[in-house]
Image (cartoon, rainbow, N blue to C red):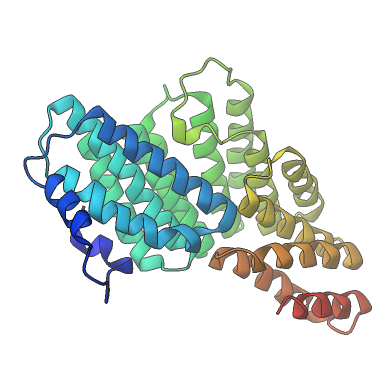
Length: 330
């Protein structure tokens, strides 16, 4: 991995204890990479993924970057055969994408993009085109968040080309849903609706026995409903946005705390758009409470966006109540 990638937490770091330095030497050039090493990388990746989903990228990012720098990176300079090498590149690609994702979540967007580019290179070295498409999907999501709709659509389409027509239905659904989000940012109603319809049809054809990559398994009815909710919100179709956001909240497990927060803000925004001010403020206050317990710039941005939409109603009693509840959070 590019050394520049790992500098997120390295400035001013104290010297490593002797035992840690010995570990680094052991993992350097000449160290034979074993299946156990790769299994460990995968396990650590799952741990950081769970921390990110529950508490936000800011909780896990620095430790993840250091792990990548002190464990994953030296393994790439070790010795391994072709099969082990591909699996190793794949495992480090996953950690690198996650480092980008957690950077994105704390609004370090330039750094995130550099990680994503590096993850693409590693996926290519692993010969894993589907995972390369997943990295492109991640980049498309970042483009949506930054309001770059055209770039988001292009990245999603390149990802679709990367996996081809033989991809499992769940993966096809994910790719079409992400394209829909780009169209929604651009206000392209027909293109967005068509992509959402393709995503829905693909997910309906999925079966429990499908060979779905581990990173796509969390894309389910709850996530698709969330994509629908966000898209309809961006198109100012608030009744549909509310229905899909409610469905996502019903279906989504508690472990996906940040995703549930996003759906709650989408629902609050939809209720506001429908003139249901009291309900909107109650939902918004719940989301603000959750955001205060996370280390996620995106979570705070969702809440701030909702508060901007409240401005025209700032003198109304429900909005005053909302502001009092949020002020009490400190």
